[in-house]
Structure formats: C-alpha cells, structure tokens
Amino acid sequence: MWRCIIPCVFFLCLAAAAQQTAPAAAPAASPAPIATPSAPKAPAAVSLDQVKRIFVDSFGEDTIARQIQAMVVTGLTESEQFTVTENKDRADAILRGTGLEKTSQEKHAYSESTAAGGAGGAFSGGSGSLAARAAAIEDSSFHTETVNDARIAVRLVNQDGDVIWATTQESKGAKYRGASADVADQVVKQLARDLARQKAKASTSNVTGPTSSPANKN
Image 1: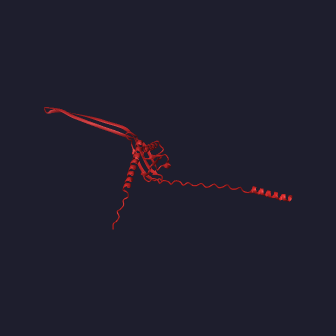
Image 2 (image 1 turned 30 degrees about the vertical axis):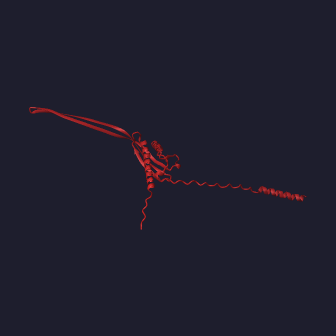
Image 3 (image 1 turned 90 degrees about the vertical axis):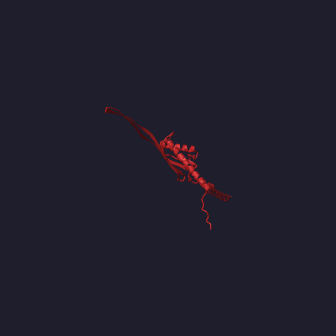
C-alpha cells in the first residue's frame, strides 16, 4: 500500500511546484488609439479684402504707444469693417507697428510799424517858414506755442509673415482731438479706404472677367 501512496504524493508535490513557478499570463494589450485627422489649415490671406479678423499687436511699451494702440483698436471696432480679436491664432492678419508722440516749443514773433508825417508853412514878403512833423507807431509781440507731434508706422502681416498692407501717418492734432487720437484715426481711415479700393478692384475683375484675344481666322 505504501508503495502506491508514495509515488502519488511525489507527483502531487511536483505538480504544485510547477504551478508556483509558471509565469503569470501577460495582460491583454489595449488597442492603439485611433488618430483623428486634424482639420486642414486655412490658406493665409494674401490681399486686404481677404482679411476678416485682425489682432492688434503691441506698438511699444511706453504710455503714448499703448494709448495709440488702444485708440487704433477702438477705431477698428467702431468702423465695423473687421472683427478685432485678442486670440492671435484665430486672426487672419496681425497689425504691428510703432507709435510715438513728441512735444516741442515753437516761437512766434510779430512786428508791425506805421509811420505818418506832415508839413506846413507860411510865406510873407518873400520870406517864410516851413515846419515838418513826423510820428511813428510800432507794435510787436512774441509768444511760444507748445506743439504735439504724433507719428505712427504700421503694417498688416498674415499668418505666414507676409506684409499685405502698410502705412505711415503723422499729425499735429485736429480741432477736437489731440495728435495721438488724430493719428490713430488716420490709420483706421486709410485702412478703410484701401480696403474699399481693393474690393472695388476685385468686383470689377469679376464682372469683366479675364480678357481673351480673338481667335485667328484662316
């Protein structure tokens, strides 16, 4: 009987040891994520009439440059020709430039003079006397005037870095606004004029179409 039991116990021990030393099954690999194709990038604007959204970049770190930049943003928004965005990545074009304002003193002198003269006399018996009178009036003035001169140079750049529009404006102020406000207004108006000119040119080209030479007749 012991001869039968001992071999059975021996085989059971071998089986248990084999189970303990067997490598654990590797976990099932997770499926690879499916790549979502990204939307194709829109072509960069190549002309002014293709620009719809504008990002206005910094014109400088000084106070005057920041004021001019803010006035340009306000002018563009009020013109309703473009959408002004603060998201640079969504803009069709970026408006960059520099702006400054300087103060100078201009001296003005004014002078005017008036002269008057007269003569009178009496003669009697071959003798006489003559008297002359003269008077002069001189008026002069001198004053100093403070003049503010603002200048700005800007350019409109598309997302590829190509310049599609640029202008330089300067002003010494207008009747109801200072030099900085006036020069910012000039930039916005010049941009609007050039945009209208570009649209009119494109509209004319679409109506007339490309000109073609007549076919040769044999």
